[in-house]
Length: 131
Image (tube, rainbow, N blue to C red; front, side):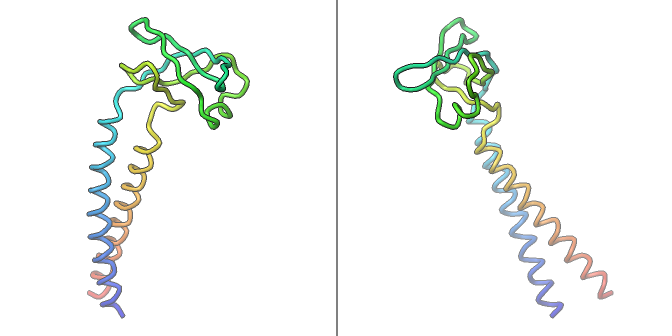
């Protein structure tokens, strides 16, 4: 039985560290491709296709974007709101500075690396427990 636990710990440590490192690399690439998002104050208006937000960007241009149902629910009845816009784009906005997809992949990478650490510690404890 101890050999089976050793084998499982070895497999989980390799999988945890390997997949964790791969996912961390993917999260870094996703973060770099996500671009720069800057905070702005936006005006919320009603239109014939739902609510939209308008803002002034750093260059003095006006940007606008239609709100999704989730964004409308989050903003509520406010006339103005703080949003994040992508630098260089006039129609891309979101309510959080960081990307939810990047955050999810990064958390999955941390979880897999944690699995690798736990499996490695288990393997070392089993090694020293047997003497």
